[in-house]
Image (cartoon, rainbow, N blue to C red; front, side, top):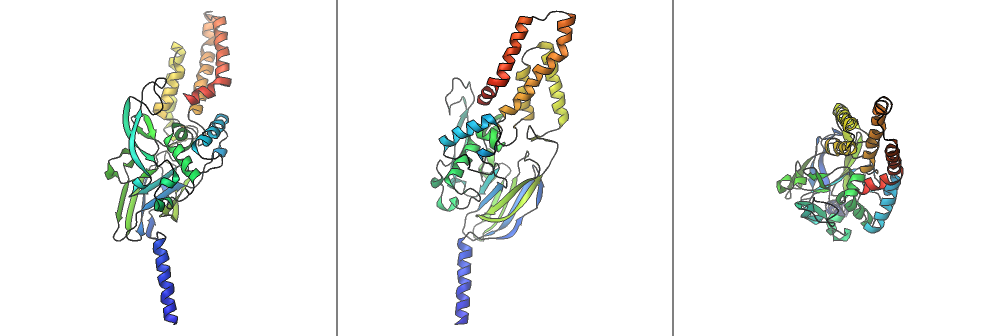
Length: 361
């Protein structure tokens, strides 16, 4: 009787172990990586199962966490439209690496480019592809829906879609983007093996032997992951550990990017010199420099457009200080009525209208 009872307990444990998407094996290859390094996870799941490897930033973000005045208003408005709340929290950086990405969404066409004033939403003169997450949480495969680590509710799924598929969500929350040329298309969440040929799967390897359940996954971490960012790792919804991403270069806390500061200083000096000599297009040049060269994104919770503005405002402060004496006192060729009117417009734009217009455009 005792032997029968023992065998019964063992069989029950085996069945539970198998049904829950069990994991066993080597785990994460290191406890710490530099930003941009390749992360590798190996192990074994139950034979016949699909692999769902969720890698999620440990520190969650909810709209209530931002202190940006405009961001608070915009996120409150978008939350009502997109089906999440002001308290809904998600990992800003979240990846689902799997051999069955089709269970979470599908690849579709994405149009972009062209004058925004003439093009409606979803229109453009160029076309590429992107991975669209399923519109509803319940549309996700029933098994896959339970394998997403910290993403467990309809509101979180809606917020995840918003953060990774809308330009405002990417520029305010995620700060990572997949691009065609210099144009942001979306931010990847569901990733498959790079044999798919999809540009968002590049650098990712998913090897799964379904007969034995053994797997090896490797992917390149985000090059601009903030220093000391912790990630939790889940295999088929079982947390197997975590790792830390450390600094890899000079970190720009406002730009939220790694870059050699020498290039930034030289670029800013050149833009300032041009603006002082010509007196035109300085703000546009500085914005272009930050967007195309530095790729300024700003801290999580602050929209990138509202980080660009302070640098551009500095042009209108330091350039006049440098040239005022020469033009006004020595050469006496300052048109005061025009100059003062121009100054009044600067105050209106910077204090009142500027933050709204720059965020929208």
